[in-house]
Length: 139
Image 1 (tube, rainbow, N blue to C red):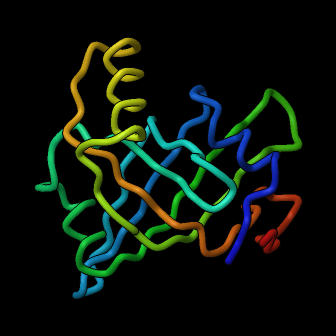
Image 2: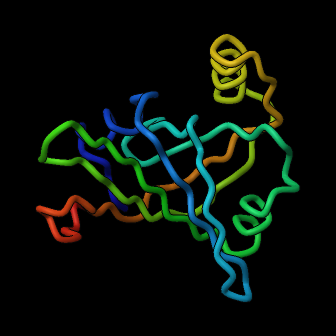
């Protein structure tokens, strides 16, 4: 089990940092989509809000293969850049409970939108994608 270091947790909890989620279906077809709500729940878990229901390619792929790669990118005016890739396993889709309520309240307040669920991902490995680190494995 990989555990995200504090700096990685902080990066994923920063709402201003863009995050992208890549999934793959059983045929090998890739899908990438932004997930601005992606956040670190704890050192081993990432989660994101779903606005459209489980009908999207992202959730279809997650349910089929459980495989996901997530990138968070923080690019300041000058180097060093912070770019982290987390590879993980899709765990569940929550439609109620404390985690769902936290996301629902936050997105309603911030963007005025209702969510349909929350995707939960277990962190399997962590890599730095910053140019200076050359894909170094962090955990």
